[in-house]
Length: 475
Image (cartoon, rainbow, N blue to C red; front, side, top):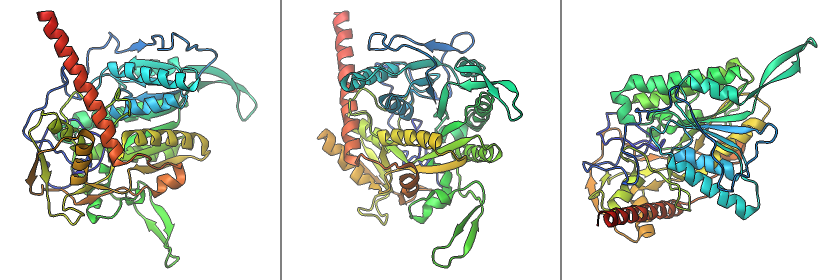
């Protein structure tokens, strides 16, 4: 359906109108189990048991033998939801760039083993480049819990400053230079069944977090948004521009007439609570930035992140059931599903199947780093939104062929009719991100497919090894 955040939820017939910008919801009636080497599946709304106060810190030695020394007052980037699919790849890219990282995750939709993969890949990169291992701090907690305040406070120093009248005063100085927020619930279907939980976590949780950050003078904020905020504006078939969804009136000059035109905010066709939580969150962030010039806030609107790190050690491994096109394709290729349903073959596209904007998850991760640096350097203030997409678009059949080529296997297809609310073409305009952030996607769809299949093959190999070990123990 919609291209947006990677979801991992239950198959469902979408309601009328556009839904999850998460591309497709290609799930059919075949069930999908969690990987055999992972904990039992749980709903994204189910938090695992934590310590008594919901606060657990892992500061174990790095894979480089404990060479990470906390001399002085090191600066950190805080990544909330940092062990999820996009979050984990963003953490890895931050570490590769030399950033010290604080990871907050309650493991409700991820696994702590992902942290081991991140540390291994970071250590390998640092060793190859003769660089010191950055600091990696993991805090297992729910970002809405009271422990979040203690965590932020633990990275804060009291410093003496001089106010405008020349008097000395004590102020907070945080060692957290910027925050990247990935901790929203992200299932379209689940948001319809549990709207209050979605509003409480995605919207109320965000408000509480902003209050805590403001108290400790942390104002460099990157928000994980979604192309779902464009609503039914995707029906035009034209590339979606950030100006298609604004939160405050904007003035521009018509290039042909020279006339000044004022555009008013509007939202059209937000068809599920998930989409509305992203829209409301953006609106709140825009209002906060307008009210307090200290804030520098970027909302990154994802289209369809796919692929994974080329190493095969890090990929998409949610606790729930995959419903997006590429994860479902891998399940067909590995025999977990019988076939792929292709919804609509008569669209006005290259081959009759719908066009979506797929982008490599590492390109998405790099987009966050570009936004973080841009926020820190720009000197100005305010709220700004950017699309993260390829800007080109891929048909369903082209996506199928890409994974068939990578796997050297054939995907069984079931040709189905269009679903209510589907659109034929949904592609991002990336002009603003290119001009202002200096960001543009590097990886091709073929590379996305190759990296994804590498991860799938490695995961299958590990599962087979575990099964063989279990059988040998029984014998």
